[in-house]
Length: 333
Length: 250
View 1 (cartoon, chains in turn purple, green):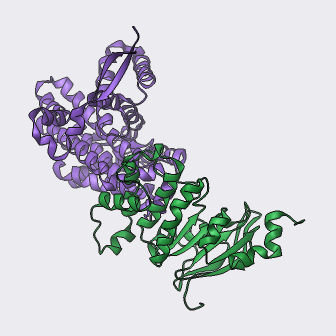
View 2 (view 1 turned 120 degrees about the vertical axis):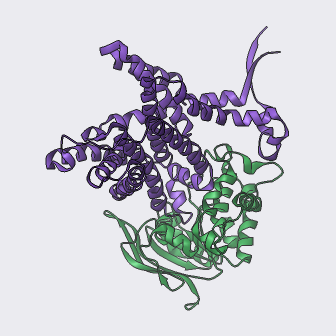
View 3 (view 1 turned 180 degrees about the horizontal axis):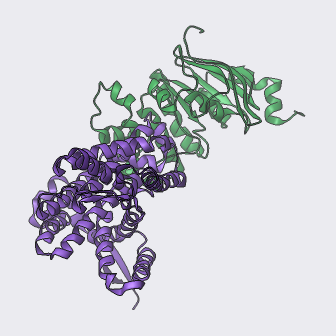
C-alpha cells in the first residue's frame, strides 16, 4: 500500500485570530506560548546560570540585539556588513561621556544610544542611494577606517583605549537591563514591522521604484530604518563599554559585523525572532567549542555550513511552519 | 485650451549618451482629456512618461503641470502633486497579498493630505478599491498573493495602485499589453468611469483599435520625435505615420 505525507494547517490557527482567540484556554495558549516561552526563558535564565554562563548570556543578548539591528536594515533592503560601526560608535560615545565628563552609566547608555544612532545615520546618509553590494562595501570599510584613525591620531586614548569607566551598579542590573532591552526590541520591532509602516519598509526592499511611485520618499524611510538599527547597535556598544569598564579599538572588530549576520541567517532572516534564536545558538556553541582548542573555528564553520545547507530558510521559519501545521501519512488509493 | 492646459511640455530633449531618446517634444494636455501616446517600438513613449513623472530628468526643455515648473523634480514629489502612473512591466510586491499591495500607495502623504491628515483603515479602503477594478470580493481574489495572480489581475492591481493615490492625471503605460480581448473589455469601463470622474488620462498603447475608441486625441512618436498629433482617424491617415508604422514603401 502506497502512502504519502499530508500537511494540514491546524484549524486552531485560523480560529486564533482576533476575538475568537478568547473562546478557549487551548486557543489562548496556542497563541501565547510562542511569546510566553521566550519571555519566561529570558527572566529565569539569569537566575539559574553560573557566573561564567551569565557572562555568556550577556554576550548572547548583545549579539541577538546586533542581529536584530542587522535584520531591520536587511528587511529595508540594506545589507550591512558593518554592525561594528554602530557597536563601536555607541561604545566610544558612552566611554567618552563617562571618562571625560563622568556621566553615570544609566545616563551615558541612553545618551550614547541616541548620539551614536544619530552619528551613524549621518555617516551613512550619503550612501543611502547605493543598493546591494555597493552599500555593503561602504559599511564594511567605515569601521576599519575608524580603527586606523583612532590609531594614527591617538584620539580617545589611541591604541590604549579609555580605561577606568564606571561599571553598572550590579551584576543583576546588567543582566536584566540587557534582557529587558532585548525583549522590548524583539517584540516592539516585530510589531512595528508587521504594521503598515513596516510594510512600506519591506516594500522598499522588494521594489523601490514602485514605492517611489506611490509618492513616498524612500530615502526618508531608509534613513529612519537606519536610525532605528544604528540606535540598537549603539546601545549594545554603550552597554558593553560599561560591562568591560573599557573602550578601545577592538569595538570596531569584524566579529561584531559578521557574527550577527551568521545569527540572523541561521535563525531565519526577516523575522527578528530568528535573529535572536540564531544568537542563542551560535554564541553558546562558540563557548562550548572553546574546549576543542585550535580546531574550534573549523567545527564552528562546519556547523554553520550544515545548518545553511540543511535549513536554508532558517530555524525559526521551520519551527514556525511546523507549529502551525501537522503532518500525517495517508494511503494513496 | 492654452489657459486650461493641465500639462505642457515645451521643447523637451533627452539624450542617453549619444542616443537621442526624445527630440524636441512639445504637447499640451487639457483637463479631463484622454490622450493616446502611440508609436512603434523604441520610439520614446515610455521615456516621455519617465520624463513627465521624474524618473528620468530631461536634458533640455521644460515640463509645466498646473502652471508649475516640475522639470527635474524627484518622482515622489511629482506624485504628490497628483500625477500617478502605472508601469509597463507590472511592479507588484510579489510576496504580499493583493490587498496588502495597496497599503503602499495608501500610505502615501498625498492620500493623508487629501483625507485631512488621517489615514483611516487602509485594509478596508484597499479592498474597496480592488473591488472597483474587478477583484471579485466573493472569490477572495484580493487575499491571494500577488505571485499567484494571472497577468490580467496584476494589470488591474497596477491600475488600482494608481487610482489609490487619487490623482488628477493618470498615465497608463501599455495597460492592455499581454491581456486577452475579454480582459481588455473588462478594463475599458474602469477607464471610462475615471473619465466621468474628471480625471485626465494619458495612455501609451499598442492596441490601437481599443485605444481609438476611447481617446480624444493622439500624439504619435517616432525615433523620439513627434510626427503627428490630432484626432485618431486623421492622424492614422497621415503619410508620416503610415511610414513610421509600415516602413518607407507604404
